[in-house]
Length: 148
Image (cartoon, rainbow, N blue to C red; front, side, top):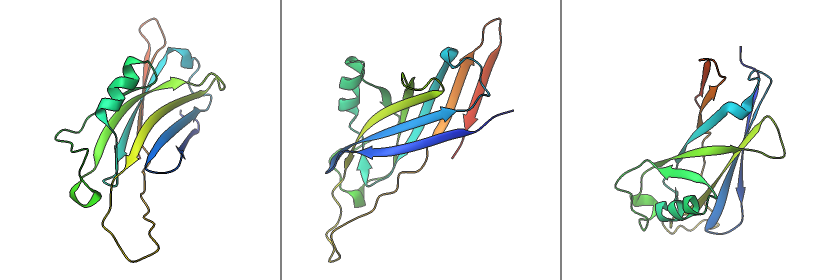
């Protein structure tokens, strides 16, 4: 039986270069979260991009564990010539919350077509898929998959 899972996404910073912070809080259904790994599959809309070279640099410095899944990815393409991409991120346990995981992902806005409106464009970042593996010892393993 699964208890409540709370997912929160925050966009940090202003301008074209921002950070997506994903926080996941689990209820009491899993006894020992210390044995668990949480993998987040985040779809990135065409209006944003994630720089795979930046991700590689952040992995080397142990800041985040994320990798691009999408192939034939054009960093320079504007919004109207781009397609969605996909990123896999291993979330880390939150030191401030015993039942929580969090992940950090730098995202960048793509250029959009000019228009005559107020100059603002909305981009929707959908909820990610969550995949959790827990090794509870003595051959007992727990898998959890939460789809958007």
